[in-house]
Image 1 (cartoon, rainbow, N blue to C red):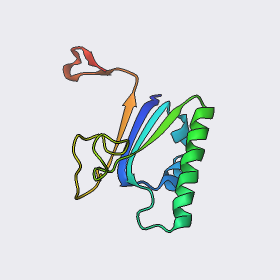
Image 2 (cartoon, helix red, strand yellow):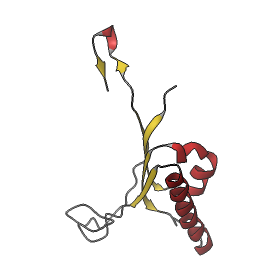
Image 3 (tube, one colour):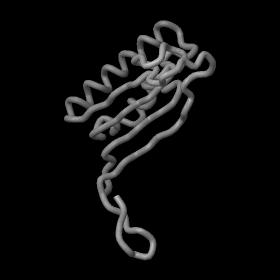
Length: 119
């Protein structure tokens, strides 16, 4: 029974409510990092506040289970080396728009041919 040990979510606009409500086991994952560009993205003020509330609830639920979740906003157009732009330059066009989910497991998988294993 493999258990996810860490999860990285990256997307410009994450629907935090959807992830938190439709994947309730996400709070059981020991380490989650969410990279996002915007949590408003065309939403009205009320929807933006709801996103912030869901992020707080998700973080609190993870911590109650001894786990962590970090939400990291990336905005390449912000000043270089700032909280939201770790790059040494400011990119005045575009935005953080990577889409991916990476999962990590803490077990070994045999390599092809049975010669050794990888972690």
